[in-house]
Length: 303
Image 1 (cartoon, one colour):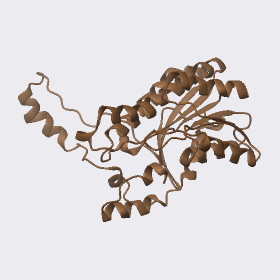
Image 2 (cartoon, helix red, strand yellow; image 1 turned 90 degrees about the horizontal axis):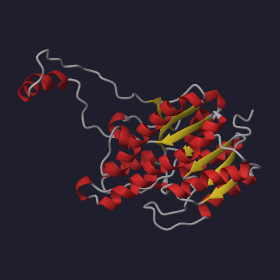
Image 3 (cartoon, helix red, strand yellow; image 1 turned 180 degrees about the vertical axis):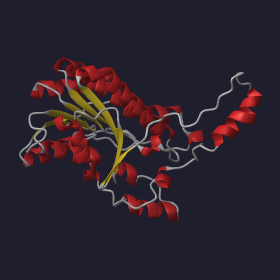
Image 4 (cartoon, helix red, strand yellow; image 1 turned 135 degrees about the vertical axis):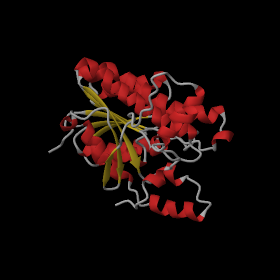
């Protein structure tokens, strides 16, 4: 059975890696796909219609339907064009996968404003732009689904990625807000933190033995493994799932926790700076989170 038969799915950043895998599987499941990709370098420079068209060609060769799109998710007007192309070609939109991204990794105290803005503009603003362009159509048809790609760089932490981490954690807040605001229209929104070896991951420096060893593990992470769960969330059978944060790593699927109070310090007379130092901080300190990185929280090899 084709679980997405008759549906129209937009996948951004679908010219390679995780996005291409999702687009190909969406087509295999019966969806018509808008394959969006600028064909740019990892830092956002350049541009080519090649990657998006290659994905479309693969879909068509397998008997599916797809259209290539090279508009930028980072610009409001361009995002509107992505949505409009889906409507022009196929007459509707049923799902969106916000996967497009870039990297400008720099240690925080050396990061420039341009390096910060460039990443936030694509990941966070891009997810907003595309989602907002599609939202009126979801509202009108009283149904639809978003899947946004977040990252453990934001959920947990990583070196040299303040821009990327801020954008990816911002996407979690965006997704939850969409889920809350649009639930009455049967629109759902979820996040996935994908673990996959892509050209972005391949760009991570391996200038230490430890980094080289981690890269060997990263290379075992198959980009295509992200697609099945992504498309399950877009299917009608996944309609009960919204406002959640998941992770997918090879054959593992995770549900991440979300921030909730875990300890309370109370003073009936109110707090002073001194009493906060003497009482509140020591009371809460036992539950503080260490400065962990993603690799500290996921120390076992992918399975």
